[in-house]
Length: 227
Image (cartoon, helix red, strand yellow):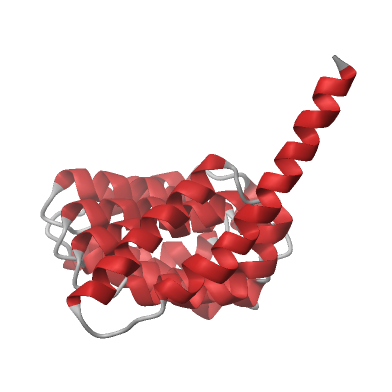
């Protein structure tokens, strides 16, 4: 039994090593933008393979961290593709990346991700918008105690302002999704979010969701509210 386990570990390491080379030498070059329908189709296929690798556990935490600096700009570019499928796959790939290594990313790397996701909240596809919003929630979950809310207040302010715009979406299901994401982010800098929410409350179609958010902020523990 022990020999079988050792053999399986070797096979896994071998497979992961091959997966890293496949990602680095095959997928990344094919994610680079080139003009033409054929190139666009290749990029979509590469994004699909990337997502399968991330979801399948074929890339280790350390391997993905090493490749993130090369990978992220290509995925950001894919978020702007004409193809809805490519944009959707790119959003899902960012979500998978955040789930795998989000808490290990440098703050500078994290702060490059959320603006790209915010752009997709205005996507023409409701599915892309929804997946992008989920990714924003994962981004917030990636912020560790080392992420200084005062130092990075301008980033949080921009994020809160953009999310509050979508809290006034005509679609109530979008409003509900945005509210949950804002609640998740409220503990980072409650006073900042409170000010931003109060500033837009009377400008929205209905103050209902703003009021729910403000009620949630007021219910946070005292030590959290001191931010």
